[in-house]
Image (cartoon, rainbow, N blue to C red; front, side):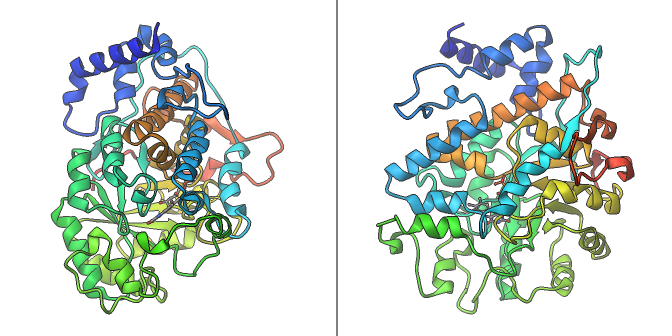
Length: 449
Ligand SMILES: Cc1cc2nc3c(=O)[nH]c(=O)nc-3n(C[C@H](O)[C@H](O)[C@H](O)COP(=O)(O)O)c2cc1C
């Protein structure tokens, strides 16, 4: 079938689908596959994996529909940003810390696990929905908070991302230092987004940020705790050398307060006393103070050790995101997937545990869920889509991840997320340090309260 026609049919099908009218974040790919299982496999290749058309002279995709996997978007994003004379912005997106070892560790960890597939199970109908804090998401793949998305696509920024996420029923987390306000992002997303908080060193400012996000209906406030120690983003520094633009177009060097004040979430706030965003001296006392401030759900992002997971629960935290900031905070060499079993083991199903860092394949998502994660987040891939093609790029990245995830669910014989059996992941042959999920307790997917 002609790819354009296939896509049009797909969209027409979606428009008529009763699943689109569902109240919360319905997944388009899951809707397609669930509603028409007999045809779904064929369609998943026609519609979800077109991959056709002429690439450019460098072999880079020129439209989102040409992408065969999400990696195809990275060179397209790089090309787009270099063409705009913004190598520093690509460096900012790509960078890990030091020699990018922790960034690589996140990806390499997935190969430490293999998936034990099961046969002769009718898995034509697949339901990828998950309930987190009482809200049903169409897909367990959410969008991690990424700052300054205007650096990747000035016109569309977080708003194009929100529209792209809405299309596929993906929840998203807005960064404190995004280029858009929480109200406009929630509006474009079609429902309130989660709000990620950098603490700042002025609690009055912190409280005002929380209040504003809560007024916009944010279902959760996510405190990021992994940027306290400073960092060395060498890949960024190298690419910045090649950037000849006047940095003051985007930045206000010299005054942190002025720099922060330019971000929409700080509009109207007195930031004159803010000297840093990341809470350099932050301790559990801060978590207590914030717990007393946040009326709804409080999530900590950046947890990498079971001791901190246990402590979070003592302080009344409602959820965790296992994260090392995409390998761009500490240069520990420790992957997020590698610590997931110990964290899930200590949390014992009491609160949802999300994870991010290097998720690029549906099988990566499957492995994390089988090891006990409630959901996963992706960061760079949707920004590649945004930089290269705007909203359609974001949509396609998420569509591919969903399609791959559904495919491996079927192959593993899981028709729901609750059916993703911990026994279906096993250390790969030769993997040296792959913690076994044997101590992972029964997981809960309906973590409403
Ligand atoms: C350019 C960039 C900016 C980021 N900004 C933030 C941020 O403002 N707040 C935050 O909590 N995490 C931030 N992160 C980390 C992401 O939320 C997420 O942890 C990480 O990107 C996941 O890894 P992945 O990019 O390999 O998918 C950022 C990541 C990138 C790449």
